[in-house]
Image (cartoon, rainbow, N blue to C red; front, side, top):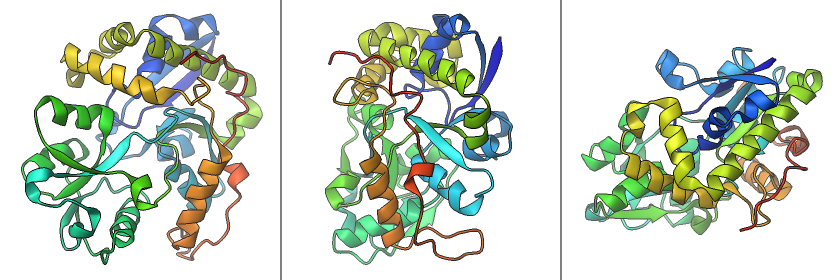
Length: 319
């Protein structure tokens, strides 16, 4: 049996269901694989999945596409490569409480943004504000990651970035009225988030192992699309995690996020080159990318950031 070590980007949630379905239903075992899944809780979020991957602690990791860009510019000797889009389209938004009166990004000038501390995050927020006619002047506050949503609800912060099929759904169920600012609505192209990534050296050395892992994972995500309630139960049972204790909520989240797993042709994992081009060019045009020497990066080879070689022949689902 070959082994794969996978680092998640968060506590287990419905973004990750396909991995746990593949484990529960024996798809990895049938592919000759043992898979070990770890979460950032293991070291209390001290090391990002991208760093763990770069340092050789894991073989695959879940991360936003900006982490892939970052490691090509700050740690070019350890190139990370996106090998599948976990979600086919953006499922996130910048949000404020309706009661705050902040009804559009321009009104965030001078306000407090709750930041995850991710690469490019704060710059992207400032750019959204500018694109809406503001100055892009914000204060950032970094509560612990799991407290960001609560910090918004208690008015410790004025805005934060959320995942719509999770916190967005929580807000709807609890009658918390939100103003939602989608990046596309303010002319900020965003990359795939999250993606499944690995290192270029593993692609070169173990393409067959990676292929089997991604095929089995794709089967798990297709199962979650076709049978979301059963997939939600498998996620709950396999993880036994306290954040998944509300079975009804997890099922609703699973039903919601299942609509983001596949592209318009019914494929899981496939990435469009134009999405990467538009996002990276936007970062470059606005001088957001700097290298390890602090110099502004004005050119980046898009083709080294991602590959569809492992997902191009996966079956599709009729949608």
